[in-house]
Image (cartoon, rainbow, N blue to C red; front, top):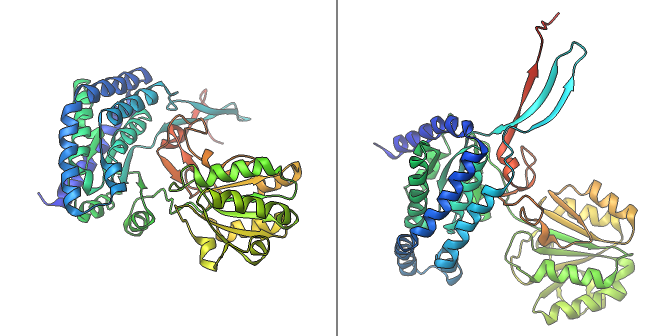
Length: 418
């Protein structure tokens, strides 16, 4: 069989298995996930051996230390994967939930019920833990899932999925409900992206270049999240202690993640008092500040910000800062340069807070809170499959509910249309 034939077979098997997944009860899905967790722990030595093969190959290729760390499995990380499966098992099952019911004048009762999406394809980079996490979320929502991980983690991903599939088969669930694309070259991805007959949604997880490649070549709807250019706006009425803590946490807790602060906006009326303070604190924490002319008037040691800096996702201890005339200019800046990810306002003015929430169009908008809360777990979703900066069909952090859709259900008593 050619690569194209093999991918088509995997996709067709996933579609057939999706019907079996949709019939499973919550109790059956939960028991399945708990058994999968136990199986991962029982076969830790096998996983470590397969992961060691990936690490050895990656080291020979000269992959960075940071990438090697993402790739590495150990007993603790395998335990965390197992715990993640158990946590998903404990989450409420969205499938079958009736979200609304209403009565029509002719007596028909009309409602909307949550159902699985069907078959979900996930394309991701080096981290093997995503194999277990993504599988758990998709299966709990009643879907089949096709996983294509990074080539660096191929042995780890095949081993993890093999263990999970063994549990599924013992439970009488078709193995096609969980598949890993076994080809490391790009042709496997390209063929996967053509399977619109069988796959309902593609979720890419990784850098901007990966996501743009998937969007460019996919015939299947794609959940997009190119980058996170996140903003904090310090209003004139902001509590400066509160603002300082929010900015420090947003920028420095984990600067390399997509919900980290990248651009700080400061109201002109607060600039004289707040700019020297925040510049001193952030500089002391090793943050490189790139400010506009108004900012540098009060912090001349700052580097000069360029137009390109306003668009930049630094993913590092670098921060662009601009002084704005007020809320209108802050919102205008965010709408122009932002990536529809996460924005926060620090203010004591209720009206400004409400305007910010209404007029800023990003997937997560916060008032007096760190951008680092833009995370499925932190927002109470329990777990997260990814973050969407597109508005169809989901927006912002995506949990179990976002791996379902709704259908209309109608109860009648013999009504016919006039």
